[in-house]
Amino acid sequence: MAVERILVCEAQTPFVTGGAEYLVRSLVQQLVGHGYQASVVSLPFKPYPKEGILPHAAAWRLLDLSESNGESVDLLITTKFPTYFARHSNKVSWLVHQHRSAYELCGTEFSDFHHTELDVGLREQLIALDGQMLRESRQLFTIAQNTSNRLKTFNGLSSEPLYHPPRLADQLKSGVYGDYILSVGRLEAIKRTHLLVKAMQWVDSPIRLVVVGEGTQRAALEALAAKTGVADRIEFRGAADDGDLVALYESALGVAYVPYDEDYGYVTLEAFLARRPVVTAVDSGGTLEFVEDGVNGLVCEPEPEAIATHINRVGADRSLASSLGAAGFERARQVTWDGVVDKLVGIA
Image 1 (cartoon, helix red, strand yellow):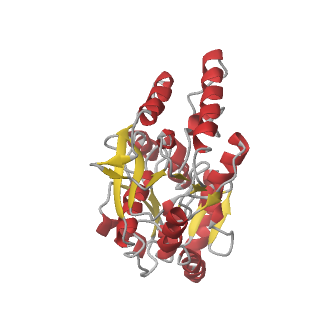
Image 2: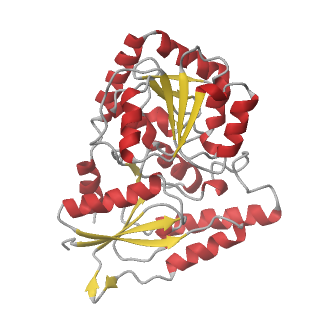
Image 3: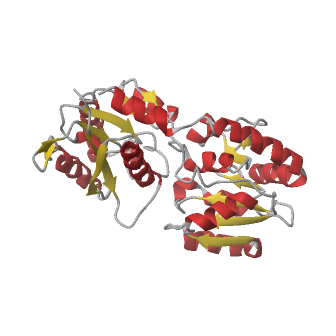
């Protein structure tokens, strides 16, 4: 069967735009550019209260996506939970992540699942249903090896990682290494921006920290900067438009990105495409699929003083920043959209 009309499924948290949203829109754009008719199917998602998670999944299950406007839909591509609950005879999953609170985050400070009868039962039911729904896919792909590892650990399912370029890939460029470390991402607890704020107590002057992003933790981070006496060396830029973000990457000394067990992390590849070295942590997950300690970045324990030590290394030696950044660029330039589209459509 020739594939012509493709739907890409998106679970959207209203008023929030992040990596998953960029992935869906970029994929649709790439599919159209490769000659397919492609469109997005989006439903709102709210992860709380926990009891509402399965009804969200049921909403996807009830959809009839076999055709639209009297014409058949040839391929359905699902992404993160719970889009893969959708029914279609030709379904391929490119998994961003499952409901992380019930999986790898369970038992950590980042999860609202606890060892109670209700939570344990809900978690077991969710894992069982996920396995059933994902097995309906003609093929299982993920956005990173880290996601594939989780899928194998919790659901016993094998999958193939498909890496894709970040949204700004074609715009990023390299300039002079400046006097600031750049942090990019949502200001949420799991991104651990607070470690960077604390690290500034031990970072040598005149190095500054520029924080790009918005989120529920912004006020707390600004208060932490004031409390630790480093507020005058940290700039909270909020949300930046594409032009500003490209310029910030271009002139940064390096990029510090230390999330907890990240799925993939666009920031890593964006930094590399701007030839900036990346400082990350040993438990940051997907970043470690690209960052090699001492080769294209620096990897440390998720502790403020350790992070500061590595930032100071780059700050004291611009030639080190340049060599690490150049190696990062060579790694990132190998990631293209052509391979992703060929895999996702070809399997169907």
